[in-house]
Image (cartoon, rainbow, N blue to C red; front, side, top):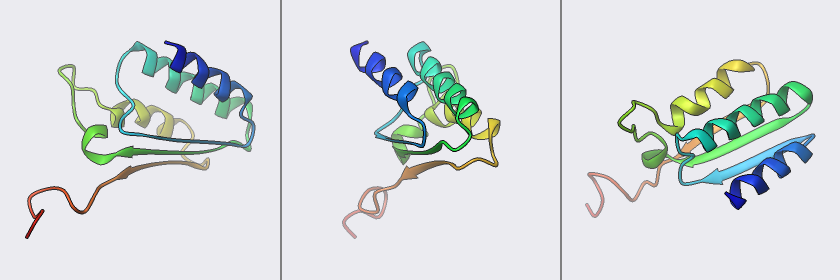
Length: 101
């Protein structure tokens, strides 16, 4: 909980840029509230740029409710598509079916 409170405080203070990198975002209430906070901040500060980078496999993993980090962040991307909001997923080329060949 302290982690999310710290993130919310940092997002509130952000005026020009937000950069986040993580293995995945999650799909719970805390994560939904975090994305809502990001959306509100982009509405308040027109010049705000955002970069979010997640691990491809964990970020696209769907839970029992059919949600993933992708579905949660799609709300953010869809809201202000013309804005400078970048959401990326890193895929390690050394993993997967062809690893070790």
